[in-house]
Length: 209
Image (cartoon, rainbow, N blue to C red; front, side, top):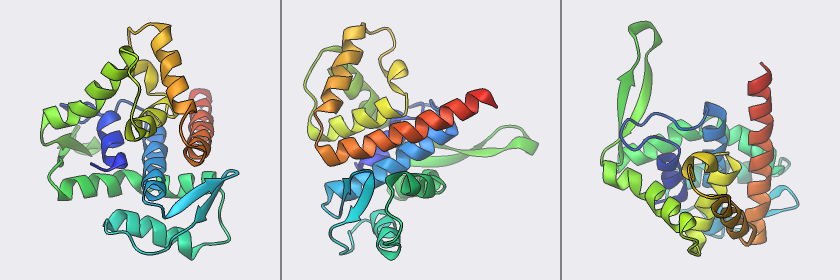
């Protein structure tokens, strides 16, 4: 699966599809995951809190193509935080749509008639739970993460999902998580640092309003 798809699973309950994070953290986390997918594909990089397009050739994935086209069309706007905010407004629906198209989730209306909303319920609970179970197990047992899971763990850490992911684990497991993320390639660390700043600001605003 794509990184944004796995983070989507991580940020939602594997049975009900209900969010584990508040809306802004999920949105910005998904936006960062989409940018990380393009970095992984060699299309962009991150330098000094800015996004640089390194290869504008279209990816095969339609959503990656959409994101890359937007970045390439706005060369004057390069600040990573600006793009996290921009893509954060649409990332949830776009990632959910991509997952629905391949049968990973199903939309379901929940709530009372006058307050209904759409929740994307996993089509298979075991598939949805695997991201969470795999990451939690490796971190609790101090197993070195592969490059993909370092990125996924970084998204969890910088969206403040880690207290839930490691609930009941010793403090050493949380320290191990931070060390793994700190050893990620520099461009990814640049992206995650901006994600952490954006989410931290949103959390502070949420708590004071």
